[in-house]
Length: 143
Image (cartoon, rainbow, N blue to C red; front, top):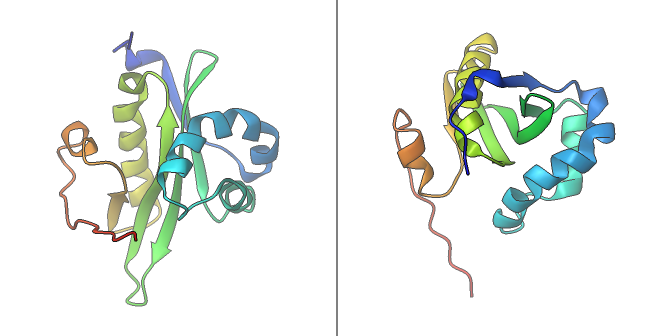
């Protein structure tokens, strides 16, 4: 059963030097999303980029329990436009963390001088975050 009491949820970005130590717990949250990426993202690359500080790893704790992990990266286009890109998210009791983590990431987007924040996810997420405009669809052919 999902609890709607998000008051005790703490959201923070992990320092890169903690990724290796915390990876066993993080992988439990992130691997389902990695598997759904259809090979576009893999576990080793995700761990390495977060540990190197190239990507950001965010966590949501409810009390002392890790509820979710989210991986973001900042993309800078040749035009100079910066976009915060949430590429992986996973966890338990999503109603506890889904709104607080996106609010924190919106703040991070502004702090980092990004002009947009984009999420890659399954179609149902557009109901969860109605303030996000669906800009494009991805069509994929697999023989």
